Image 1: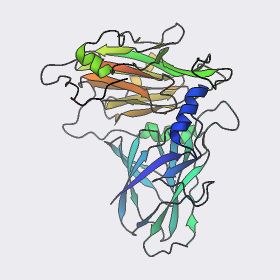
Image 2 (image 1 turned 180 degrees about the vertical axis):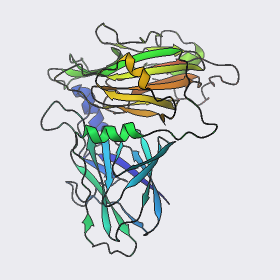
Image 3 (image 1 turned 45 degrees about the horizontal axis):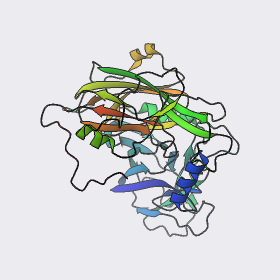
Image 4 (image 1 turned 135 degrees about the horizontal axis):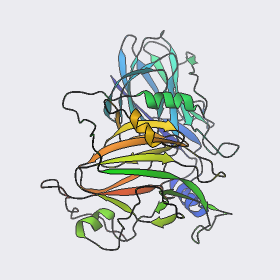
Length: 398
């Protein structure tokens, strides 16, 4: 049986107002008031009467949990009291079966896990809370609540006491790394294999830094926050979409000068893309930097639109080219979002076989408007591998 677990965030305000305030202060949106599981924060949240999701299971049956992190600004630990999991897929790609009693999932990621209803009949909490590996201030600038739901065995009354799982500490890097780095891809006949030759080898360093308050940041005090990849803070075009500009050949919308390594110059705002030919193989070393001691460093889930990629290696510290000898070229996990640890790195590789403009960005929503993004421009291949025209009712930019 398939059970979906949808972890999200809740603000006690209109989220549009939260976003606007974040833009006006230049610091991004305020932290959420609660996390949720399937839309409810549970009975441990500091908001009475908010409701709690409950699901009934039968002893002896095995359930497939599809765990989706729909929170906008936090990676999450997830546990069910008295139960263990076998992970079988990540980001909708099969993995080798991986036993674990805790699941770690970043915004934009999904995990499919089998769970046997093999505990003594009763009620058991499932719970989720933030994984934040580094922070620069006290109290922590993130939501410290725990979302809860209840797993109830058939025949057990609703008023029976429920056991609570022990969640890892917020900054438990060891548990998170053990989970993320232990997954491997399930290789089946006919599946894509890791390409052995590379046409584009990039090092993309990214992070946050302090910047001066901009004129439109009317509630900014002392400084704002700027995010960048290779010192380019991504700026969205104002009058035409990148995809339409590519299809129609509209000039002066973007530049094809996104650097292939960290630029030594100061950060600047730009609509920079990296041009690659159809079917080129692209390898990217994602290096998580800490540009500002005042801001600290943070984990960043990096998401690539339009493609799945192979995760060849991950680690802490600075990437060293000698680490290429450790790449998993046999059965790496296949994802579309990779959690790059604070002060750490990840190496991804993909085949650019999908023409278009494809966003690569941090999936923490607070970092996207700050500029933590870039774009791959993938040119047309031989027919029929061509960029289709915009639909007739495609909305216009104003």
